[in-house]
Image 1 (tube, rainbow, N blue to C red):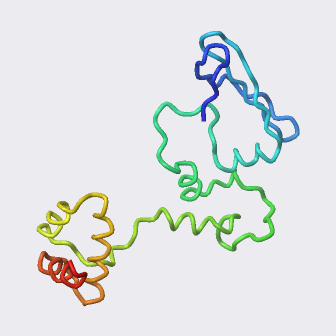
Image 2: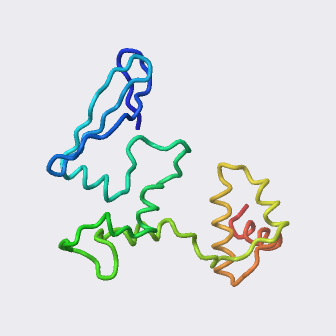
Image 3: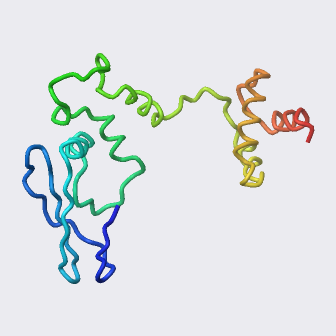
Length: 166
């Protein structure tokens, strides 16, 4: 998220934070061209959320990875982000959020349980139009699993194609 200066349409830059007042935080931004400033005041709940997600105000110089904050929070348990009291619904041995394990599982690499593709079969799959390639691949893999094939060859692809009526 970026803030734009209304006067010169330039991206505002993070300048500083003001000392939290009873759990609140104020972030001050400044236009690098005309030096106009504005402040964003966050209530205690918003401040706690930023802290628990390990958000760094002002951004970073390198591009962020997709879901970087969520991934880092789930992969690294930072005791400073958590309060000492356990909330209602806390999960034993895990984080406070009942959905954190589901989100963590969504970003894990899937286990290789499907059939293995031969180089020739993969080359042939690349010739399938891109807009239907993923559907064709999953259909062929499903056909292979249902028929006990552990390896997808061009022959398995031909059999699957005949089975699909193509």
